[in-house]
Length: 371
Image (tube, rainbow, N blue to C red; front, side, top):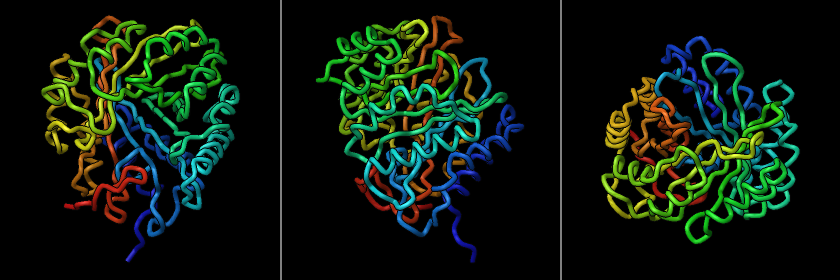
């Protein structure tokens, strides 16, 4: 009997299947597999019968989260978030931060990223790491042409970090605006992301976690952002859940896109958790019900369903685990036109659940059920 595949092999198989099923991405299959090889080299080939990987990116600790953008007139692209893992399965944030920095260096050596702007802020986060394992994540997007866009997500431990990071890119006044419009009683800044490009004006994004699902408070947080429409929070909640849900664990995340050339917010997005464990009120509890709700929402917005979404979901469901593979659904308005509207669906690949059960970071929520 052949040994079970490593995480690198499983992710390569997943990505190959996803890309092969997309007409706009099929020609990028070799590039997609090379990207996975680069991003998992040195840690993803750990024997699958050893200790589990621990990550907040999936309920079973799989350090990988794929997503699909649904928009009018834009081709499909391969998108995912990934967390590099320490070789020794350590549980300290410092080990995860070191693994991520080592991956940054490998990607730079391969010519895939430029670390010039990263050097301007990394000390802010390295000096005060979070108490959890999460410290520094990666995002990647590969379209029908061109090189992949790769970014880092820094996990924020305290407000001084994100405020200083924005200030170092000339966004101090914008940081003050956020400090005034994001009350600590209702939300907290959770991540700062930075595109790892050589552009003199890289894009930064600020990710704000809301402590509850209060549409008025969420609308107020988005007040400095152009194109966000008052009522969008209630719109997405009622479309996906039928009503405003009561939050038990994690509330929605607002994402603010920051232009370092003009020191402005270009637009924002609202991303809503979909897993039922986050709510005390009833919400769709299986992938079929969630997908139908998303389909109705997308159709009501006048957007076409990107065929990559059902294909990627079906590929993720091949793991045979009976647990929702939907993580988040996001609504974003890049501008005032209908063509500027986007919905993004974030999924899970529960590649460890059969062996290690279901967990959220260190919190185990029950054994995995398999089909």
